[in-house]
Amino acid sequence: MRNHTMRKRMAHGILGLLIVICGSCGSHTTEKTMRISGTLKKTIPARQITIEKMILANDYFMKKWPDPGKPIVTNKTRPSNIWTRATYYEGLMVLYEIDPRPHLYDYAVAWGKAHNWKPAYGDPLTRHADNQCCGQTYIDLYNIDPQPQRIEPIKKNIDNMVNSDKSDDWWWIDALQMAMPVFARLGVLTGDNRYFDRMYDLYSFTKYKHGGRGLYNPEDHLWWRDADFVPPYKEPNGEDCYWSRGNGWVLAAHARTLDLLPADDPHRDEYIQTFKDMAAALLPLQRPDGFWNVSLHDPTNFGGPETSGTAFFVYGLTWGVRNGYLDAQTYLPAAVKGWNGMVQKALHPNGFLGYVQSTGKQPSDGQPVTSDSVPDFEDYGLGAFLLAGSEMAKLAQ
Image (cartoon, rainbow, N blue to C red; front, top):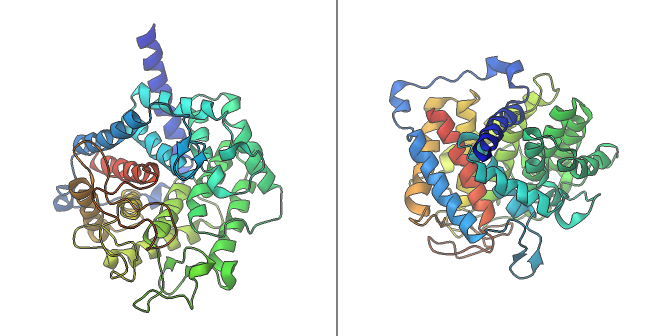
């Protein structure tokens, strides 16, 4: 009976995740034509090897955190469904998609149950994107097994924002990754375009208005982390400050939103163009070892390998190639170099991920970043790594 139940659960998992991730992808198949030459294909790491690296890193974390509901204690105690851990579960769910082992699903469900499927800190009407990030996984789990309690709190929370005219909540660029995919998932699930419309209102405030001119620089095609870094703020070398992980959040937000957004959404083309412009801007900034520096325009400001930003960039570039938005000949070598760099230089034999910058908002935070340095939170870097690996594995397949 147990084996039968697990087989049934695995089948439901695969079907549910296909529904969540593909969303409306069938309606824009002409955009998703991928062409990769035979020579380039040979450079893609073997699918099973990539999955093994993902499992290694994930097993290390799950052994360290056997209780998904255990609070996180650093400088203070926080619930385990804050944004750092929620980002990890984004990665766990894509690992489960390509390697549907029941204990991965069980671990995610136990996490949701431990928090009664509520936003972080339990505030039912929070407007803070960080506290809503956990909703991405709650909704994915609902799509696998549609139990109403899995979705009711996060839907009520987002509905409160949809039914409001307030659109100035996303004042830092990390918020795009935390919350945009939640709005997109609910839009697909309910068929209600108001989720997509309100998502764009919030996005456009961040992009065009906050800080007086918006946080997106259309000249460099990169984003300032928040209003504190809008010029005249400069890096030590006189360049604008573009934080690696911050821009990684944004690139990932576009990919995870476009995965679901209907083909006829009026803002779809803008999201696509911004994604492509960012990818082009990131390409020449990659280090020879495959990583990106924490400061994208000033390699002398705490320069060195950094895994979390790199992983998000690898995820975005690989997703863009696989879905036909980015030219494989141009972008795939950078994505493969980034993945190989992380596997060879950051991933330890026991599964620990090195070179992950601790929490913060600028290059100087969480330093030093080394192969052996342990960040204050190990979860979001792993989540980004799993997202990157999932796209690399899909590309190999």
